[in-house]
Figure 1 (cartoon, protein in one colour):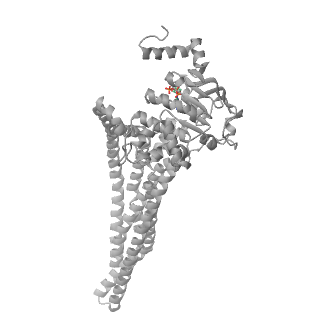
Figure 2: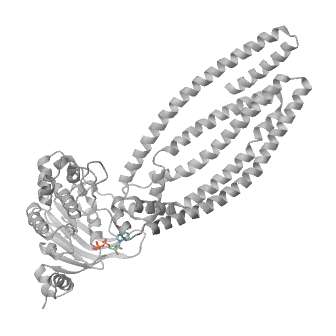
Length: 565
Ligand SMILES: Nc1ncnc2c1ncn2[C@@H]1O[C@H](COP(=O)(O)OP(=O)(O)OP(=O)(O)O)[C@@H](O)[C@H]1O
């Protein structure tokens, strides 16, 4: 109510001064009283402002930290499908853009602004209405047209921005390719720089063209509707002058002039605040849509996973189609991983090997058929417990830009401080000799992203990832192309040890190299989503089928002539 009181006091001060000038004795004192009241109000207003700013900064801190954290937590609760599907990944990216909490903070502070301006408009408006309803009405509605123009523009801009999400991702991707350490080598040597910059430039240019057109149209609309606003407030001014002149109300004229300024600013501020609120809720809709995404749709039962398998894992007539696609990636797969044995899965690129691992680790659910673990359907096991009991390393394992201890310890995070266990895992993965050369041993940072980081070779990184799998000491071990970058000598050593370490475990190894495949107790050949052969290395060679063909091709590569000759 302060602004309304201010207008009333200003009018009374000016009126009193005018009367004092006309010889009215008591008017001088009244003017002074009004002046002192105005001063007190100004001080109170200032103190409120300072307090408001303090609360404002607290709110900003609180929101920026909380929202970022919530988005991270949400990211860990989604299913793999939501990351591998372009549509939901798009949603995810849109939400990340809002994840610093800036927009939510803006929303709150806009709500506060709108409320504050509303108080000004209502209180000043009330004073004006008592003076002249028509002048009040003109002053109040004058900002409406120009704000309406802003709202129309906001809506258009949002629609355009929404449709741009994919192109924006492309832009960020081109920027990433030209500014990141592990993309540098190829970009430089294939001389891709100018091409990537050109693609980026073309996208920016398209954006620019559309934005310029929009800005042009916006100027037109704002210009036209804004003119109505100007006419309305000028009309109000004339009316005010006329009505003050009639009754010799100088104070009122001063009040009109002050309130016109105040209302112009406040009503404009309020309506623009509403327009921004509208825009921010549109954008925040993306964040809320993300936070609302279903979580962990793959659920299990309560059955704990066995500490050691009795019988083994069995895929029975399992088929699989990736959600949102229609290609049968696995087509009636029957597969047995006997307890305590090592099975190797062989097949050409795209045969479906990794997809089998994703089903076994419950990152996806089969479209048809059943997976049994010790004769119990996989769905009956507790999902977290199941995942805790499988030591898995994927082809695209992570190179954590953290310490060696983290890199290996992540295999069993509860045992991160168990030096003995970490050392044993490092030995099993063949990385202990690498670590002993590092300046800070297990506490050495790996990678190049952070200070003092030591970069490893591709094969050394792979050994670290293998150590991570061994750190788990799980009853089921799944290694997807575990030694593709490791030299032949180290590979044979690691597999020599694997037999000891995983002697108790049921293991599945996916590999293209036959040196790796041969160590398995049993080999399964997968082709286009079907199991086409299985048996021991010798059985499969004498069967002279696909396995023998692939083996001979590779052997010929090593020997320089067909192995069968
Ligand atoms: N997320 C996905 N969405 C849709 N299709 C996929 C997805 N991941 C893989 N595919 C398809 O499924 C098929 C099997 O892929 P998978 O990764 O299981 O093959 P793979 O045998 O492990 O191959 P590689 O030896 O190259 O690793 C491929 O044709 C691939 O294009």
